[in-house]
Amino acid sequence: MKTVSCIREEKNQYKIDQYESLLKDNATDFNQLSKIVGLIGNEVRLKLVWLINEERFCVCDLADILQMSVPAISQHLRKLKDVGIVETFREKQTIYYSITAQQQNITHHILDLVSDKIALTL
Image (cartoon, rainbow, N blue to C red):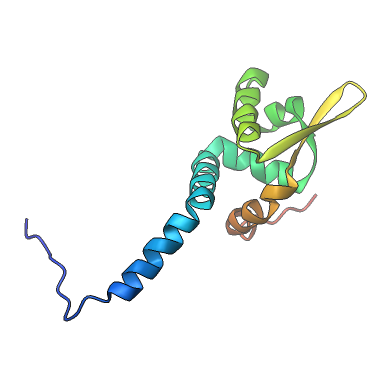
């Protein structure tokens, strides 16, 4: 296998330093976003986020829709809740899930890729 090396005429140290500094200054944001994208990258969790973004659901509804067990859905929801993607609210005895206000922006961007392909006709 042939290795390709970088050939440049002149190193732009100012540009390198600038972007290196930007990455360091925003390390926390990159870390948080990486965790979110990694979790939503799982097919079941992506479906859960899409569903919760569309309408409020309890864990039983989500289990029925995805044809999975309640404990399995609960485990996925726990992971999403642990990184602040979803939150819960209670109405009487039922606990519902919603996207947190802090993560709505990123989840909407990710879900736009899915939602454009799905025509919901309910």
